[in-house]
Amino acid sequence: MRIDISGKRVLVTASSSGIGKGVARAFLKEGCKVIISSRNKENLDKTVSELKSSIFPSVWGVQMDLTDYHSIEAGLRQIIDLMGGIDVLIFNFGNPTNEPSYFDETTMEDWEYSVRMYLEGPIQILKRLLPFMRRQRYGRIFFLSSWTVKSPQSHFTLADVSRSPVIQLSKILSKDEGRNGITVNTVLMGSFPTPGAERSLKRIAERKNESYDELWKREVLSPIAVGRIGDPEKDLGSLLVFLSSEYGGYVTGSSILIDGGSSPYVL
Image (cartoon, rainbow, N blue to C red; front, side, top):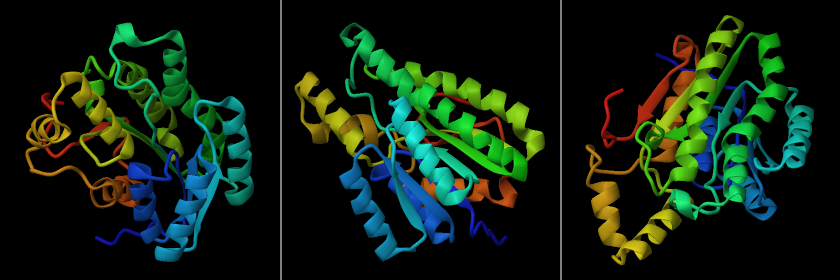
């Protein structure tokens, strides 16, 4: 099997570090033209420079805040000017600012922020980029989510509730767009190394009055059947590269679990 997606135009949101950056690296290594985005201009420029020098020159950075309508619109205009459209759209996200948090600890401002980031921001982007995919009769859309949307956790109430409608949106779009050559899937991730995940775990450790290392081993590492956390580039990026190729054209409307065997439910 020879996978060839060279030349595909790829947008990875929230990708100046962590999971998004690892996914961008995977597509760059396949010869794709990749746009990474971040709300933080300094981090964005630094990551673009690093990727250009270490992997492949066909990478661009666009400043975009998924919680801000005007920022998204400005970013989309820049993306369309650069690429004329997008072939592979990967929605990666940061964390709500007030996370981890239980329901009684959240404010309406927290909910507005979370819903805007996980649901309304992607809808705004899709409204602009789907027409390009329809015209070329090819597109791959991925929502990067978590296994916890199917087994929600009380201390992640903002993220788990705000992300769960995306599964319905993904299924609806997959049915509507399949005959246009567009596939749409949600990826339910397990534990991957990210700055946001580390911050959340440290906050939980503080609340429980126990060490970070003890909590890490018990709550994160021990439940993983394969005995390690995921690698954003090798594990997740490779999966998305495969699904973006001609061999992934029959996989759509799915919630794909990639968690090393750690989740407690059966799909």
